[in-house]
Image 1 (cartoon, one colour):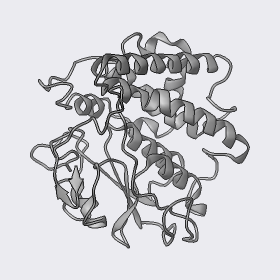
Image 2: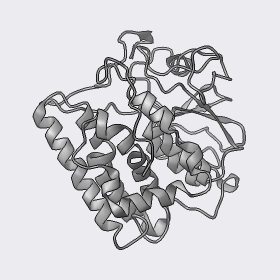
Image 3: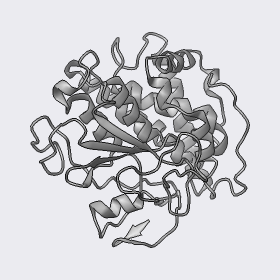
Length: 319
């Protein structure tokens, strides 16, 4: 991590712990919003007007938080509006590294904007005295040369309605009539499932681990039961809640079941969830945002959990 703009601590997946040894995630620090007229959003400063080819998205295909933004970008038809760079999935001592011709995993890219070697150098361009973790996604403003936002939940909302006529109108991921229910589902899934798998994998005590695992599988049971009577988590259409659930579900058997020890059951043991994940995966363009190879290589590169660096052969199928 960086402290006052200087690299001070090599990568540690456990960002913080609570009194019982449970994993605590650091809060994102860049929280500005892109709007159609440049007015301030719910947090941060104004001045970020929605324009074509002004904004750039740094992502890693291992990461579910980054995957959310890639899905939203695809679903809202913003591929020609917002450019992207895909980082190497392997987590190094200095966390996220850009691709290069000699040692990169296929599908990764070099930094086309500044030629940086590591993502932390992009953070320092935005704030020279930055203190904190280096995370993806990062939404970058090429005009102001700064980070707009590094909180995935904000970014998917911006992609949904912050770009006005530049976006595809046929899909609304956060429709007004469903917002209270979407917020309720999101809150439940974040604490117990999206972040719950990390609380299991990065727990430092048995009690913290067991509590997190139970919450993860309670969540899976709840999702499966909900999908017994409807095709999507909220209403009769794809919403933001589905995007947030899908990115964790698609990684479950590939990484969390083994590496994070969330191994009471596999995703394929849930009939409704399996059909749901397949249904979303087969939507136009979504498969392009998912890389099983990057997911497995990336997670199993976490030295604290897998010192040997051996990447499992399986699973060989997504469902």
